[in-house]
Image (cartoon, rainbow over all chains, first blue to last red; front, side):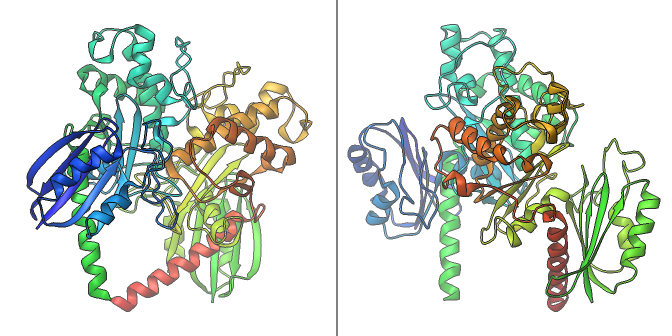
Length: 295
Length: 295
């Protein structure tokens, strides 16, 4: 009997099964095309296994409030065919097992807390900086959501004094994602993020924005750890700049752990999401067993 | 037997006792001078009553992590004599009853959730806009804090295009508090907030900042209700402008309840904090009874 995990992303679905000790038995990656085509391949993979439960961390925005009709749906996404698609429903129909459902970044935050850079803590934020900027939150060892899941990448930010760029966000123009995600770096410099030299001045600007956002998250959520992941974080020098920007902007206002131990890179590079999804599968199975025991 | 509540503010300590049905029996206000003088009067008041438990909502920043040495202390405040003062300790020494300890704004958020504008909800944010800007957070009907209490008034904000003011915050200059609290209005206009006419253009600017901050809180904490209180909120026209600014800046990104029902004025004007403190006294007593029953 196995746990099934899915990191459902806009470009690929990473699917994995693990045994009861959470060793990954098999992992595949399916390109995200139409829902029908994508799910056919995903089902083919999981059909081979007897599943105990599943965990899905999906690209968003998604319906996350269990009492609402749109629970389990992918909501307003520009990705053709996926908007208002009942993703969770398709899995519930196919597999009669308990299924945990959350955002990809929440699953990653959970993975980092249980097995990665925030191991041993009770709360953490996971922020991914890549094509977009998204955040997941774990509080008291549980994924946090209120009337919706966090959308931390879309906060407005104080603009850097030397930055006149209008921003790439289709909703907000110059929100955090609009001025600090990969596409904004390329739009300003004409160079893709991964090809920008380490001494390019744009890194200071990006660190200024990300450090500022981390400060905002700390002032509201006060997590025990901040974990950074995603493509842009492969830039070694950036983490140092972000820590420095955080300290400078916080200006000693709130007591936090030493920044080198507080703002850290992911402990499960490129796997936080899938590992988190598998761990969520285990958790939802345990909850189910517990509920049946009580009933 | 009575519950004791204190809203410990920088200008006054509001002290009250309530009976078991939470009817307030007596309430006094003591000016905040030196700790010794202030506490002498506060003790004189509470000494008259047989207390079951107490709840204290204090001005901050305060030590709020029970495992830390500074738990119960007022931390770095410019208020003479109060920095690093063990306020909770003085009450624990004087009264051998369970005492709940939190920030004034957290107590207010709790009061608004249980008896005020957020009644019936499980989560809310309470934001007070006056001499300073502070926020309290209740999640799952419990006061929320992480490695510290929220300091939501000090987030950086995207500057209003027509606002060149440098800001009043001694730490951050133009953070939210620095550009939207009462003193910044007066510094820019030469007129005290309460005397500014309703058609003064500065209100649009202030609403822009507060609406933006609410958007940031919603993107991170996603509360069921946002309650606004404090001196500046006595300006009738301001609430409408804040709602409008919130909607404009959110740009439809995240689904929230209708704004007229979502962003509301306090339901317990000027009493959210003291009522919340009394309710926290009741809660800490119940927790204590439960713990003793189990032991």
